[in-house]
Length: 263
Image: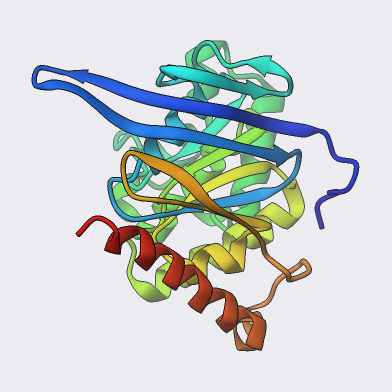
């Protein structure tokens, strides 16, 4: 379970805004977003398609500059790409000509020579994601869920302070997606990484998260910030808890209100 009470704030956003300049004029993707995430918290972001969830995550990663407002990680203003942030996307983007092990080590090799300690860490991560037996395979020999587990190990290889995940399971079938949710929950219980997880699945967000931020329609703001009331570690049986369904219905209604306003 993450240390919450006295935990230092890892990520702080204060009235963050993003406007894209386009040939047809400015497009406001995020009107204003303010939130604080404690070190070691797992926070999911829910909201309708196109509301700016991915844009907000890219600003945290330093891959998109904020137009206005303040965004800080461990008290330092985000002013460029965060090398200490691991990232996962819907597409695992593995290199097809490299082995599973070499794909995990790829971010290290891009920065410097891979050491014996790096290789040992990569091997440990592959054991953690239950892929040790596939370390010499190529991505084409893996299922979709296995490829995403490789991507998760790769995101963790540098022992980042923050893990950022943009709908990493959305392309998977329902059974594989549930398996990946269980795997991620188990790995988080081991690593306790400060995490931001973007998803359209309300149940997935409740099962995985300490908190859930709900974004309204574009140009968006954060309309709700909800603490998930379940202890860790979590088991699939938590979905049978009446509070789980109550929270699910509450979040569903909240998202529906934001989309209804767009009509």
